[in-house]
Image (cartoon, rainbow, N blue to C red; front, side):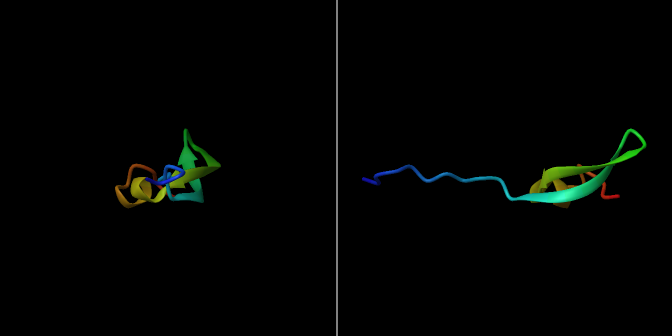
Length: 41
């Protein structure tokens, strides 16, 4: 038995993205970057 349950946190990176014509600095997971769900600025 493990005393505390292990947490699997998302691998977040601070990235500048273009959203609605404006550049924003957002925390994005690496899976989203790799899958091209978010376009870098």
